[in-house]
Length: 91
Image (cartoon, rainbow, N blue to C red; front, side, top):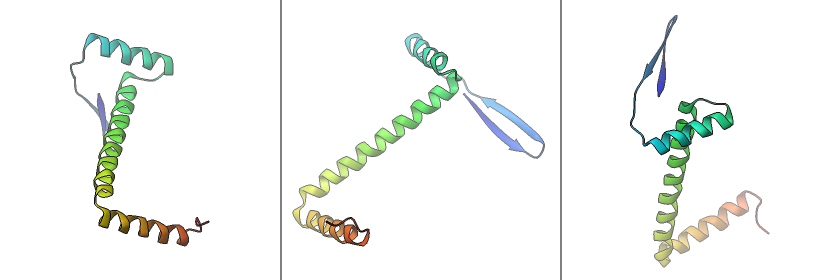
């Protein structure tokens, strides 16, 4: 892993070693080779994807909680109908 630190006239690359299983390393290397990218870029993309997945899991869980409360859910639906009209999506 590397992080570039930008200072006036100086670019310094910092790196950190992490332990992964042999299988994970092979998978990362295979993907990097297939995409002609660095292993670091593959790991960065995987972390981005995991963060997005976790975000939407929490989002969906919270939405499910809202839907369980009929009073709150009716407010959500009312807001949606108002927003749809404002955006020209009604109809």
